[in-house]
Amino acid sequence: MYIQDFIYHKPDSIHDASKILEQSENGMPLAGGTDLLVEVKKGIRKFSDLVSLSEIPELKIIDADTQNIYIGAGLTHNGLVYSELIKNKIPALSEAASKIGSEQVRNTGTVGGNLCTGASCADTAPILMAYDAQVELTSYQGKRTISLRKFIISHHKTDIKKNEIMTRIIIPKQKKSSGASFVKFGLREASSISVASSAVMIEFVSGVCKNVSIVIGACAPTPVISENANNLILGKTIDELTGNTGLIESIVAIASNDTIPIDDIRGSADYRRQLVKVLTKQALALAIERTKILN
Ligand SMILES: Cc1cc2nc3c(=O)[nH]c(=O)nc-3n(C[C@H](O)[C@H](O)[C@H](O)COP(=O)(O)OP(=O)(O)OC[C@H]3O[C@@H](n4cnc5c(N)ncnc54)[C@H](O)[C@@H]3O)c2cc1C
Image 1 (spheres, rainbow, N blue to C red):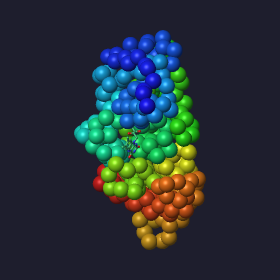
Image 2 (cartoon, rainbow, N blue to C red):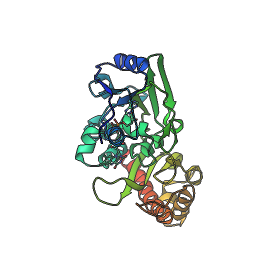
Image 3 (cartoon, helix red, strand yellow):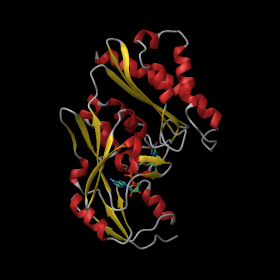
Image 4 (cartoon, rainbow, N blue to C red):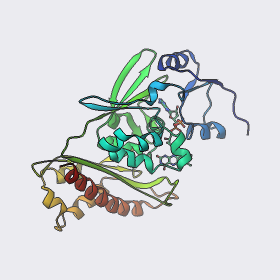
């Protein structure tokens, strides 16, 4: 099958990229192309213009101020894996990126592309939602910022508007007494899409949980924030959450109940529900362990 004709653009600034998109009849940003080019090749998606974001330096900056960490949406997964700042300040994101696809996919695919695809199995989404990240979207008309939790609407459906470019992901700096983790299960060790995943961010004040976010991936049309599990954890002490009291079993059962998994070629809905329990137990233990390291 021949690829449908399109004009390929390679701007070197966000301003020029948004201008091309604004003037195009049916243009689309192209980042690493690991999702989009597959669809274009299959004829599933057709565009008059593809606007490459790969030569825009502003999209590859990692920065921080006293409040937040700012990640350029054009950073590749390996860009996150090898960044000292990410590894030190938000290691669970680095871990999530390290588990995506193969070395080739991680060298090419970007975090912005992963979020903009809106796939329910996208591995950077659960941990970024657990960190309560915001995404910055830029068009020729201006800029807006929206919570990632609201940005992802359903499977392959996001709040991105025509001609918008995701420019940055903004992550609040984590408190010293917090810890986070991401655990995924795929059918192979490498280059494997998540059958289920679990991300946890937890914060303690004087040994009592004051803030927690459990987010389950690949088990519903969007990553699921398990509010019921979060509510059960809030106010519990580290000792209660690490003791052998049956509390953890209740938490992970509730997290599993909050998902709405499907049967597909990677696993049945029942299998996924069981996986969520196992993965969330691991992720919670790891996140709590990390708070002790940070303390
Ligand atoms: C072999 C293989 C294995 C994979 N394994 C995994 C895995 O384990 N986990 C996982 O999560 N994913 C996996 N993927 C999916 C894919 O690699 C990721 O989703 C990747 O991060 C997509 O990023 P990209 O830069 O390639 O996006 P592209 O393919 O370039 O774009 C994807 C979509 O996002 C839009 N887009 C991209 N960047 C922007 C932006 N900055 N602003 C606005 N719109 C934008 C594009 O217009 C397009 O609609 C795999 C893919 C392959 C081919």
